[in-house]
Amino acid sequence: MKIHVFALLITINLAINQSLSASEISTGYQVTLAVPSDYTKGFVGRAFLIKTDQNPPYFSAAISVEAVEEAQRFSCSLDVFLGEVRVWSSAHFSRFYVDEQCVLELNDTGDLRLKGKNERVGWKSGTSTQGVKRLSLLRSGNLVLVDEMRLIKWQSFNFPTDVMVWGQRLSSKTRLTSFPPNSTLFYSMEIKDDKIEMFLNDGKSRYSYWEYKPIGVRNITFVELSSYGLEIFNGKHRYDQIRTTATSLDPLRFLSLDNNTGNLRMYHYSEETGKFEASYQALNFTCDLPLACKSYGICLLSGSCSCIRLVGDICNEAGGACGARDSEMVELKDVVSVLTSESYKDRVGKQECSRLCNEDCACVAAQYVEDEDEDEDDIGSLGRCFLYGIASGIRKVERGNERVAYIAKVGRGLNHSHGKSFGLKKWVIIVVVVVDVFIILIILGGIGYYFFWKRKRNLAAREQAS
Image 1 (tube, rainbow, N blue to C red):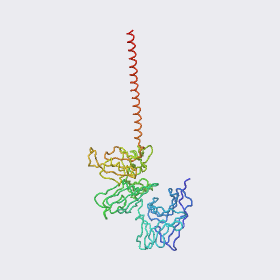
Image 2 (image 1 turned 90 degrees about the vertical axis):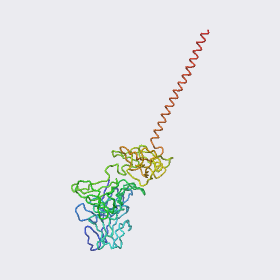
Image 3 (image 1 turned 120 degrees about the vertical axis):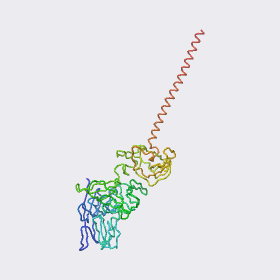
Image 4 (image 1 turned 60 degrees about the vertical axis):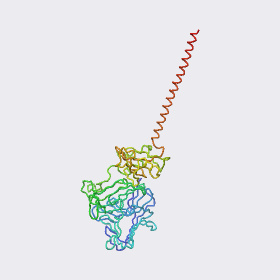
């Protein structure tokens, strides 16, 4: 039976005569959560420490112990929640695994730390000796460390995760990141000088799958989530906005980069249902998502997935094969990739594009885009060749653009067309054998008829002579 535990033994050590408000704690504070001795799938233990003074849903900060299935261990983190939605976590980029206990302390030197057994430090704010006196949770959801003058020395808003809350700003060159479960890939929404763009990241390779270019030729200084959309600023001047599409008058509360789909969504809180509901999403069709299907899968017009039929009944992969001996390139009809690779070659032909990928062991597919100014009847047309290290984001289109060709690398011998060719050859052999036998029979029949005719003629001559 699946067990979920939501309460743990909590030991709180406070400084003598310490006065706390509901939304802040002072130096000398320490809280300890006991960690189960045996790993339990689905376990969550959480102690809420401080919260904001506002109408629900309010912000709260907590220390958490959670079971991590892929590691079969427990992680320890400091989290910020809006209602039941986690909007910031110290474990977003790197988990801190613990045994026996998880400790949060704001020590006398002003450093906020997460510790495990034997005083092992797994995360810290790095604010020691900077005059920090309090940890506060602002009404905006920003978790801050401040000095006696309330000057901020550290803030969670400076370390964006996968969520952006109302009133939060992201400056140019910053990004949100989201990590799909059980995958080495990750998504990012990046604020660039001239646009907002989303990427699927694979190590050092990046593939764009959505972008928004603001009106006008101006550099983006920062973006800010307002009540009705994501506002885009140049200096202090707001010059564009990605607006929510909802008809509800409820203001937006947060924006999220989904870790399962990579889609960008904005949410408002519905007083009627008591839940957060999506008011906007960047990608509205399943097949526009970068990982709608598994590797070497094609997203069909219905939104369901199908494997590339040329490589078998299951999604077989080329497996790093390269060169004419081990692999071959197959052009898929009426298929395109929603991903745009940053690795490409300019002014090459389709055959050259295919060769470039086939000879590159890291390349598993290529998309050839013919230059628009090329003549359609020009046999030697040139274009841009995009190279891919992943065979994802592939979707079916009703009628393919003849200027775009998606070419997948498959292991030699996996192409079903070879089977068809082999079958064709067998029929050719059968036909040839049958024809040959028929011709031989005709020849033998002709020879037999000749000897029969000649014998009959000789017998008639002898009868006349006698």
